[in-house]
Length: 622
Image 1 (cartoon, rainbow, N blue to C red):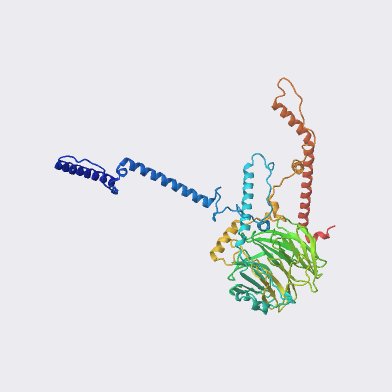
Image 2 (image 1 turned 90 degrees about the vertical axis):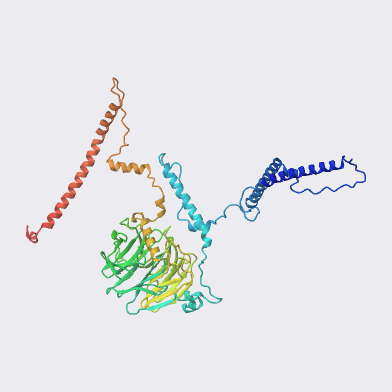
């Protein structure tokens, strides 16, 4: 605007000068010449300069044109944004990158097989008539819990693609069988780190050995029959502690982490830390032969030579339950990882299932004609494998409690172990055989075989590794078994590469999420269901509590009386009087029965007390 104003002033001055010059020339000529167009050439109009443009010189017109330009620029910017939106989102507002319409809108569908893999239990149906009118909050919380669990399973199944590791198996050439391949050949064929997993420890002085791996498969615990106990990181072969308890060792077991372990010695149960320092000596647990640790309940279950099954709460240090099985010596023991039920094998060929909540066994199964030698249960809690003195190996479906397969072994099997991928190891003497898919089609040949230096006393698959640990009379052997371990681990639950701080944080969270022993049952899914007692059961319980049936007779309805005697208060008084008269006889009978029972108990106690106070000379009295 400043330039236009200056231009206008400048043009006005030039016009005044031109007018003055023309007036002077006319005065000088004396008269004004007649202007004619004959013989004159048309003069070309001079090009106008920017300051000679009248439209520009007009301030009102310049303002209008600037306003029009702004509106045009605004319209063009709106058109550009609309074009960009159409390019990005499409005509219907759906977002895509390539500029074309997405032929598969929405998230990608997840296969049902993967959802079943990560699903934990069945979804509970919340009916409208399940709860009373005042429990809408409970109903909404249950629905929210179901939605969150469904979302978690879908995400876990969708992110399964990120797990790059796959489980492989040993494949042989044509005309060759996998059971004939030696461990030395496998160690030479694999990479260097996998080849170091096959090694032998020559411990001939204090054998035979029992062994146990931690839940993350990082550390190994060895216990010799003659008192030698050692624990070390078997990946790096770094020794943590090595002691000799100078006593017979029956079994060893890691507790919730690699910081503590339990040793079942000749007399009592001892707890040590990973440096070999004795922390506790629990004398209530005597003559312990086998041990199993329940990680989510922090319970150490022990089976003794006297026939007692005992549970020790490691977090508190108290005995939770002690049950006399009345079945003699207990040297065969296993746990079901799915529901934390303890399986015991007896010399009569019976396998019993136990819970700390009951004094009697939950299930009794006659599995063999001879004594049971070993038991193994898979991680899903579906199959149980047993071996007995009748030289048979049997596979049972625990859900239906019926046998699926039965195999005859020439020498029987003394130690059984199941891997995370379903491989079964059966040890007979100094020979270790590994079988594949024993609960599917009948197996005729073993998957792998290996001979160790001495008689096998304990065998266990290492979690998350293709390794089978074997404890025998001459020491320890680590055997490579391709396809045995789970290739992908849960870093929040059992991480083999966790640091000390991560282990401490995990320990605190595990203690906060500890499951109480009262919740151990055969079917864990029953905990998610509502216990609806029928009307008959409630009525029977009420009869037991009251001592009479309140609904045996019809309710008394008093007749109507006049003169204000049929008020609500008088009617209730008459009802109570009649009810008390009808119930007096029954109440008297129940009270008399209770008193008679109490008298009998007191008389028995007096007789016992008198018998205890008798002297040795009372037998000569007539």
